[in-house]
Amino acid sequence: MKILKVKCLAPTRLDHYLMQQYPALTPGRLNKALRENKIKLNGKKQPLSTRVMAGDEIKLFILDDQLDAGQDTGGPGWLRARGPAQVVYDCPQLLVVNKPAGLTVDGPENDTLLNRALLYLHQQGQYGPDSLYQPALCHRLDTGTSGLVLIAKTPEAEQILLEAIRERQVKKTYLCVTFGRPVPPAGTLGGYLLKDAELGKVQILPEKKPGAKEVCTEYETVAVSGRLALLKVRLITGRTHQIRAHMASIGCPILGDSKYGNNAANRELKLKYQALCAWELALPSFPDGSPLADVGGKVFHAPKPWYYGQILDGTLQ
Image 1 (cartoon, rainbow, N blue to C red):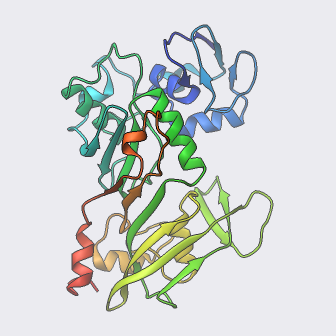
Image 2: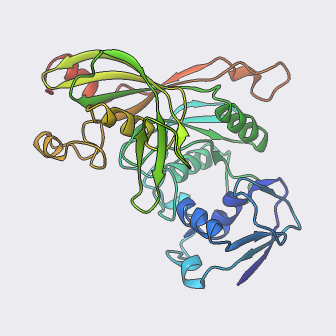
């Protein structure tokens, strides 16, 4: 058992604090440890989103080799990222970055999206080992998905953005290519999403069952090319693998998706990652006096992915 006395000047999420102390503790490992009652904050099991403060006590009933795996003495991981993040927008409260497909958002590896963002901020003179707050991811993308990610640069921005996302005030629009043309060409998909933690997959159900959560996805066809369709997809709810599972459930899986897709077509067309891009993020308005008042109502776009043009000109079909 490890006992940690929290030392931080600003309130920090429990999971963020633990990952700072033990880089080998990925979000998946933390969630598993919490389910198994191996993390106690001030003697109680608490959600990983709980904010810890100086003087709090954390008990970890996790083996030392799991805590120390992958650690080395080469300095913080962000200094060893392959390069800085591609930044779409930067202001004192918020960073919007474009994640390439194949890059994890965070984890024990040195080269993650978060570490690339921290490296960028370090190069701009905005972050270093002595900084009181580590900028935090406000949401995530699957490793194989490209596109925009919001990173809060202050605790106040993190709290506001997390609440806006939880209340579905941040509008997310994706571009994707499906193997098969949706019928009708535009529509709204409903149902219930049920996770299978052991398989790391989800399924879409027509009726609610214990543990299943309601999902809603809007789509419209932008163009078609042979067997393929280019879609613009809007998330109404934001669940794990929602777009990938929803499109597969109507017989139009995302091209390149090895988990829910058509692997024969993926091999034929030589796609390594799913053709899915978080293309647009629209922020809500924030009240006067809010730290985010100046960015309220802004809409951000990622560069259109390579497959966008290839569907329009018929190169990919």
